[in-house]
Image (cartoon, rainbow, N blue to C red; front, side, top):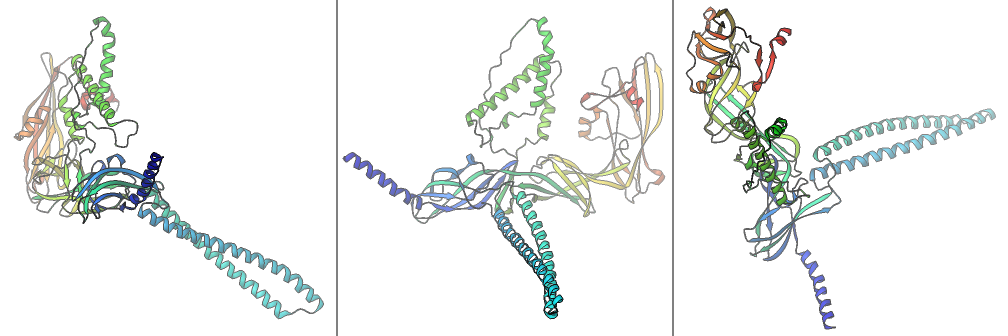
Length: 608
């Protein structure tokens, strides 16, 4: 009996304590203080005030957005607050949790009420018309009968008739006004529905909350930071490049185009933009054992090509994989644990590496690792972070929102580029050095000269301190042309010799000389049987070291010249001659396309 009494007392004490604990819970929205926007996600930090007195406390942070990643919730202890636990919960609510959506819903309800009122008034007018019809059907026979008996009251009949006509006219006017009102209200309702669909694809009547159990050490209260990831956020770089009429300096405006559809508004926050991935795995993948099998050469020869082709397909799909960028499964994954997700990615990494090693041992074609590394750089594996100098605000909306990361003036070396083989136009270009201290990611750019828009282009990825070139549109004062001057065909021994002479001209119609880089090319032989030789040139080729190391051996020709002002007939002219030499029993069959793949053959060119 004593034991039963003790159990009842414990249960009673628990029931009494439970409401007390619930009463001690403190609800707050906190304030969004900082946001780091990644590619596809954002890390949001809220400042949460914990009121006194000291002791254990349950804090409920309300208003978490619809795009929150629940498993990413965590809180930092500090400022007299010790965080014991953090959990995520959802609660069904009567109204939409988004303030903008709630406002639209309130307007929708008001318009719906107006529409219902107009409908009821139209029904009432219909009843009035029905009554007038019945009155008319009663009055007409009665007036006829009274007229027959000679007791017709003409004045009363007149008043009754005028009353009917006036009422019918009033009803017609009110019906027209109500019909117009219905049409206006329906149009406004449709607009509100579209706006609501833009804000949220579906009704969100679920409140998302973070429940924190904390210990407050100070009687006056304290603060903590709540962090969580949200989906629906992304950013991409873009640029405005501006130069004055003197074309001595270029101001590079580095912009970020941000899409923010997380479901919450970021008001007056410290914002950081990053290309890092918030779900990176911090440990190196284990290197697994590679075991080879041997088989008789005759039997193996039948399947080797199929195995190589299959491995090459896998290799092409995975050649841009970067081991250090292994991604774990998303936080919201329900069918895998973190450990199994990491193990799965480690297995893929080893599988891809095994395929590459297999290709290196059995394939006769060389795999160009350097090209793969360059491709990865272009694809944005570089990780950079930009912290904006001033606090900013970004509402949650489907539009792309543009903010400025930085604006930095750079010393510019302007020149002109002429490629007569491709175009008669001459283009303005500038060489800059990125002395901003920032990494400039590849993105779209718009160029302006003396305040006038001159065109769009692409900005490459530029490291801090790296020189780079950008275009500033066509220089209308210059024209370029290319002409085949002479072609000579001869036979020497068992070889055929073809000499071709070209003239490149640059006309400058302005009153100032212009520095011009004139570009052309020699063909290169895919086979050793074809020899290509530059015989002579009227002007020396460029001495630029970058050109000599990277372009010259690929057949590219470059002259750094100055086109005289107002040249007229004395236009700048460059002549050069090159020779093709090959076996006289062979002929040039066609050309190779990108990557050395066969392109248009001679018979196809003749058909075209």
